[in-house]
Amino acid sequence: MLIDTHAHLNFKAFSNNLEDVYKRCEEVKMSVINVGAQYDTSKRAVEITKYKNFYASLGLHPIHVFDEDFILEDYKKLFTDKVLAIGETGLDYFHSSKSEENKEPITKNVIDKQVEVFEQHIKLAKELDLPLILHGRNSNDDFRLQTVYFDLCKVLDNHNYYNGVFHCFTGSQMEAKTIIDNGMYIGFTGIITYPNAENLRDIVKYIPLDRMLIETDSPYLAPQKYRGQSNEPVYVIEVAKQIAEIKNLNLEDVIEITWNNAKKLFKI
Ligand SMILES: [Zn+2]
Image 1 (spheres, rainbow, N blue to C red):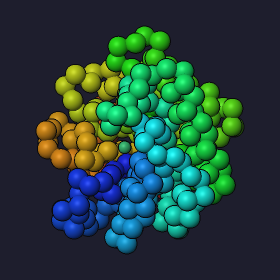
Image 2: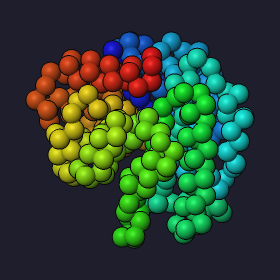
Image 3: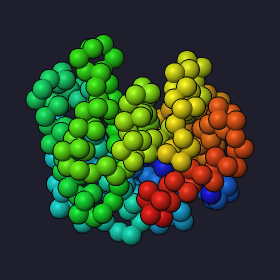
Image 4: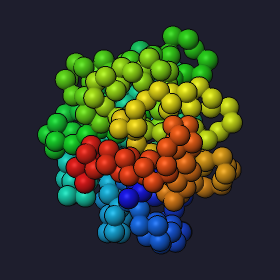
């Protein structure tokens, strides 16, 4: 079965066309994990698990830790048997908030706050025995802020909790190796279909298929074929096609193996 392990159909971008997007998922009989980025969108992700084969993940994204508090008990109350993961959580060295008023330069204080909230997510994941959906983004212009994947691993190491996926991976081969050596998964999005993503395609070549997940990050990051449009889960097939091409495999095998990986990690 095809599965998009990271979408945001719980976001406002889909408030007018969710029914249509769901129907297109149903037509190809695929599964979707909708990922929370704040309390409200986590709650919404759970609400839309009323749709067949839709699952949810609960979390406060690192770029929102200055917009609202992470109240563990409130998130815990959202848990149902269709909640498969905790996140997205992690570290973002690119920006501290999307809202101009909460935006701060990435200082030690900002990173400390992101780590503190990330640690709360690890605590919740342990309590509920769920994997983590991890977000990591490096700075574009500060060489001191290029270590996000190692920093994420360090925090996981401190808590002895290597359980989850590094979603929308854009790191190096060495970072990918560290992640898979620790038994975790790497999620690839439509970025691997972009003409300038040669380095990332090399990493796809290098990573064994049984450590990979495929995702869209809808409504963002539409694959090259649909670039500029709003992304949606059915386009995850483009990610699977690209992996099949790079690894010289049948598309059906890529779909089957990434589904088995998701089943194993998220206990579907
Ligand atoms: Zn996301």
